[in-house]
Image (cartoon, rainbow, N blue to C red; front, side, top):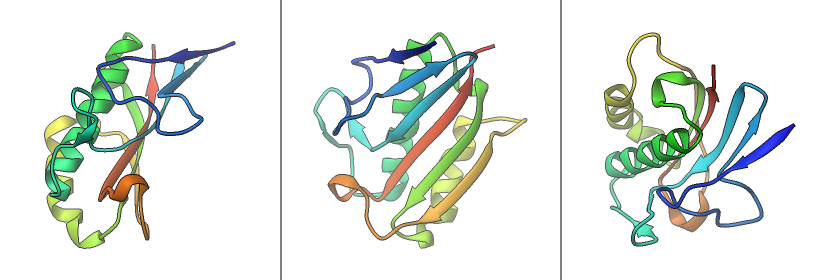
Length: 126
């Protein structure tokens, strides 16, 4: 059985998808853009601050499902410029502690709404 997870503490979907889907003991969180849910706008043009907002959005969705960031088992980080990797990695390290989630990071040509960063996650609910 699958269940949609949604919270107003993270931005709503900008297309025909869910913020997250619970399937068994896993939560699949859609890619989070650096949108402040209170304003509907990006918090900054800085990749570092965008990464921080993406992670705060992930955290809000995790909480809505009864989980926390420490339960994330896998993330995918999308950057429009891999030159931002070191700085974004520094932000990422502040949100996680060992054992760190598995991760993939890719440079992409573009992201929705002109974002510089997007982060998705798979979270264990046990």
